[in-house]
Image (cartoon, rainbow, N blue to C red; front, side):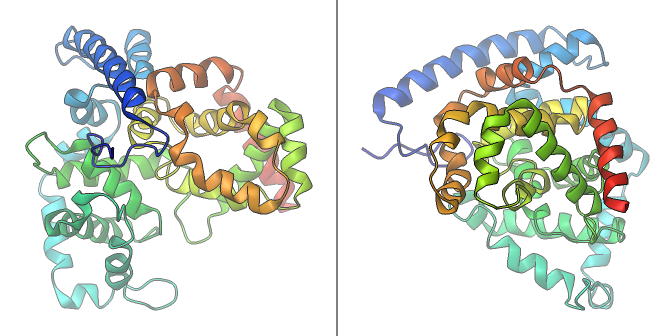
Length: 339
């Protein structure tokens, strides 16, 4: 029997039968009830504290996620201080004389590139067949290009915006494009210049991750290295798309809860944990095609479907990866590259 789609419109893993599905959903309902009760007690007070950090690490309930994300990031304050800016940007993008001057590095009209990528964004999800969703995505991405011309549009931003729209959508289907725009700006500011044309910081962070994996799971790193394929080939998407279309959707949202609160070190902790979690499977791989298939199938990984358990293990297994250490590795790698 084919299961209905999960709450955000994505398919369940092929390995989920009816009994597995029931056990998972039952456990999730109980976890969600506990989470909601803890967040109810805050009465909308999201001032940063050790107690709030612990709650965020346990995951933000769907009913509170928009307000919490806006509060713990720069997005809410930026939206208050720049009232009307988003509407002004979308109005300018509706003018042909504006869009004609919005070109990418190859000289192609950015709006045409965005429209093309919209059709590639979550094609299996019914929400992304709706004109209202696609129109809002185009508006947000186009407005961002005008607002941050030094970045413009980069493939991967479409998945980030699509995720923001789904994550902030109300139960009755209302979309919050202005909030999503400012959350996109906040996310890009949290990241170390991953989406610029040169992608220097992205390449540097891939090298840092390579070193972290070599140190944390050396045997797994040796096996992957034997195939002669650079790690960047597989993990670039993890950083550019912030694990969207890599991990199950609700687990991605839990990762983003902590990303908004703790910053980009979370990306390294999740990435390293993926290699810790799958070290047995990786050791069994025989050739490069098997390695590529392994990374493609992570989205259906049962081990990541319980987002609460998954994130608790992320923090436990990577507790030694502190911000100062990661920053030190970044500086070291950048200087080595310059030499």
